[in-house]
Length: 335
Ligand code: KG4
Ligand code: ZN
Image (cartoon, rainbow, N blue to C red):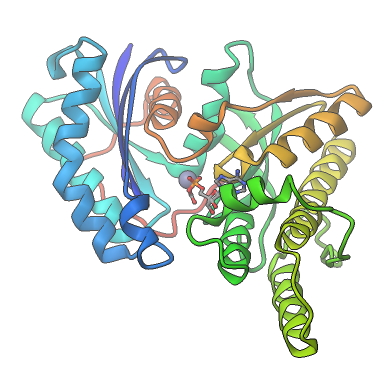
């Protein structure tokens, strides 16, 4: 079964051809980062326009790289939420047009399910059930993947997503957008124990996250240094902030694994590129004898291969969408 997958939920226009949910024949990503950098973050209207400009080319390239024609595809999958509504609509509109023109099945895919499914591509032997930490620019979820397409959300963020906190702190210390990779790099030169930033936990919701407190603590620290005329060691701030966020992500995940007796842990989403988090989760799993799975960084940030993987399992379950498929910006996870 070979599927064409399309992803346009944020600032990457992507298309891929995926065979049987696990094998990537092509994975084309046109990033808009250079454009949005100028504004310090993603500008939704510009994102939609850029998607419109390149999406046909990206799809053509995905097909030609896979050495396939559109007519060879068994179905067309597309992210229909969550994400920026104008951005999502570009992918959804194109996918519907292609499905209509070729009379092929259309499968709408949940973006977060795609992030989780990136692990199926990277680890051909991974099967549900497992516990997955999904940390991206828009979401932080702790999820039990009970079966393909079946999720129990144990925890989510109460305010900022982990990636959002990385991006905001990076901006505050003058690193620019996107902040995650820049903090990751700068933190290597800093001392993670230099500054004690808070690790938030929420009473009665042990698996929920809150990152606005640590972000505010960093801003307060920077302000107080300025007021006292003290020079800020940006590498120490980056390393200490990263230590606090990755501690919370890792601790909550390990607690959930222990409480639910799940010994297979996966990582997903853009923040899963973070080298410190990858090492910390890997070490925590090793100490406890858990198996640990994570996709390579190229499959952690937004891409269409992951959508082709999640779409395959939906397709096999019989999911089909009609030409009335719409973008749903706040599409919920968990059925
Ligand atoms: O999954 P993704 O590409 O888009 C969303 O679905 O949101 O995630 C993007 C997020 C951004 O906030 C970015 O700063 C963060 O992932 N990110 C990282 C790293 N690489 C990307 N955060 C921390 N360390 C990284 N190395
Ligand atoms: Zn994403």
